[in-house]
Amino acid sequence: MRIGRMGRIAAHALLLGMVAMASRPAHAIPAFARKYGLPCSACHEAWPKLNNFGQTFKDGGYQLNNDRDAPIYQNPSYWPIAMRITPNWHLEGNSRVTTDAVPGDPESGQVQSTINTHGFDLSGIDILTGGTLAKNISFLLVPSIEADTGTVSFESAWVRLDNLLQSPWLNFKFGKFELDVPISEKRILTLSTNGGFYQLYHFLPPGDVTPTSMGDNQLGIELLGHSPDDHTRYALSLLSSTDGELGLPGGRSYDGYIHVSHAFDLPSLGLQRVGAYGYVGQAPTFFLTTGGVPIPGSGRGNRSFYRAGAYVNFYAGSFDFTGIYQHASDNAFLANAQAADQTLPNGAQSPVWNTGTIEAHYTYSPQLVFIGRYELVRISRQALATTPGDFGNLDAVTVGYRYYPFMHSRAGLAWHQEVSSVRSKLTSDTGQDQRSTSVFMGFDFAF
Image (cartoon, rainbow, N blue to C red):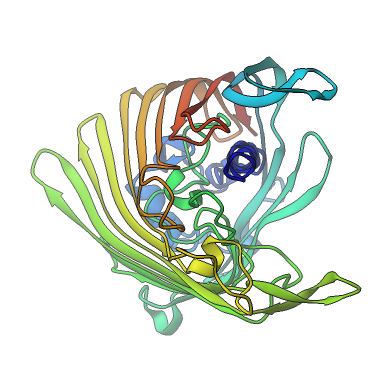
């Protein structure tokens, strides 16, 4: 029984990484530079990562408070659209994967194998447009096309009313948007299958089916604001409990998110920021059925989950560092994939886990940035009391660099190389550790 469950867990972990890479967008729009006649470096430390000015511009509703803010005043040749895609070569390696001893013969027994695959590939394409519909009415629209299937989805689609009552403290957003998280997954500098997402947003204990991720764009409303210098910021979000999926697949519940932060200057070092955040939500544990088939939107037996964390962004010259601690827990019914109208198995309990994320960048020059990240996940209470305490713990290391031969208001190009490795404790079918490794290189460009 335990062996089969571990196999499903390993497959789920691999799928999670692949999905996170496949849905990877990044909101960097050269059209803004074209609109205002600014170099891309005005807003980006290393594209697509924002600097302080870029964050202030984003918080202001993509406005500089001059006569170019309103689209009616733009030159007819201005094209407010950007596209991004990444042709690449990558290698994926996964250890201790259960396979048939003789391929195609399930009666031959099972063995542990290491599976490596590599070759040339292509990311999906993001089509990005954003800016102002009128003074103090901003928007962002990001259709995304998957490279393998051609499926079109809407990564972002929102309208924001800016500076309500003529105050930067009151801005109202409606639609599908990225949460105001401490470190943006949509502007992440790493692109590989293992390194192209943050574990703290996506990790679930083995067997947990809670359908949510803070790293995914969500559907809802957001009230956000900031001081005139953007040093103090807050965001309050009310979200449908669908993890950004359209059509209300779950039911009628809502999630809530809050984020507050404050920045301050340190002599000779620059602007530093500290902050805290929390996410509380509910998810259904079963659905009404017809002929045994679940009815979408009929979710019942909602049970709760939460995430809470604190962080610091530290700058010292060409070096910047982000450290995040997060505490999380899911209800026992969600963690054990058990309907709330049924009885929990013996020893079932609400799991508790903690994540730590340390990411550093060294900007050698405006054309070259080095990246390093270490992530850990430690489960302090398992979903079943009989499960080994370190089962499912993760350690992830990612290193890489991005070289920018050029970047201007028409286009941006980066040569990207990266290596990322994730070890998960005791998750193979034989109860041993598993490791997943990605090597990635390619040309990341937007125009």
